Image (cartoon, rainbow, N blue to C red; front, side, top):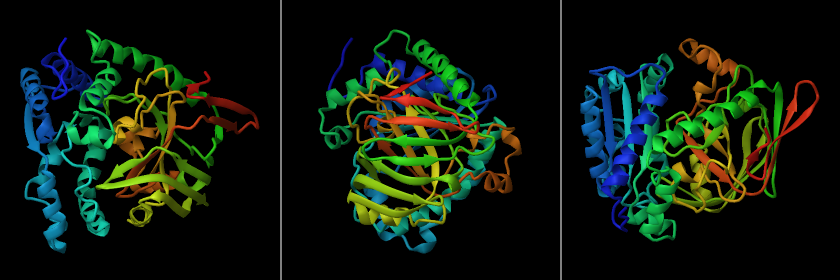
Length: 405
């Protein structure tokens, strides 16, 4: 099978598309039907993969809509030149499109990770807040089972450069991580999903009052909250090995340290340390990108609060290098797996009740966080996670990258 430093082979692209279609179908509660509307959003380098997906969606009798993302030059111009009314502008028909979408596939293939580095983060925040109503529409449609989404990353020179790897090495990491080196990767993904379901069932059976995360840099207490369920490997992200929950943000206490770097809105951020008291980050520091981090966490009222807590079992994940891409970095396997938190928006699909009954009032009552921000911060240190049960017992659930079930 041919592998090049420039592109994935046609055979790999075909398998990638098959996995993405599986991810999309798995992510939606209700089955897709003919004439459903599917948005394919892609960046220029991923054009060939978008073409293959377009053909597959047509063959399934559904209606694909294609959108190419802004180029780095366009995106920079938007933030440099836009005045207030342009920053919050939503094109006519945008709301109507999102109100009728049944599925969305996003192909991440950046030509640049740093072109927004010097842009005023307040302008970025304002634009994100303006688009939040569209995300709310998709969330409500997903809760009803009318919408599903998935996404992936296509290897580019920029991603490889920022990860300090060759593009060939970067592409091979994607191949291994997504099981594209197997003749039928979809079957492998089904197997992983089945194995993860047993772990989620075990976690859900524990009457947990609090989780305690301990590593060299972390000493964090998290309260899962009422009516919660662990989810993950749901088809939403390709790849995705994490199992996660959106906790009750009000019960977060202690210190979290992200030893894996990240790129966000063109900014390289390294060694973030957050200290939480009564559910909010009261101390924020970073070795690199501290000012940017502080501005991001001031985006809105919920930006300093916890939206997600996640663990990855290294038996599932073949990812063992920094990828300069949150999709892969939050699923890091390596020697010790990883945990990550996200500050900002929670995922209401971790609500264990009827998703269609979720309201803003119920979300607030149960401690699901609301924000325009969702920023994943990853720790790959050897660690233990202990569940302190409501019965007074303690159960070690995770150690050195493995669930202890």
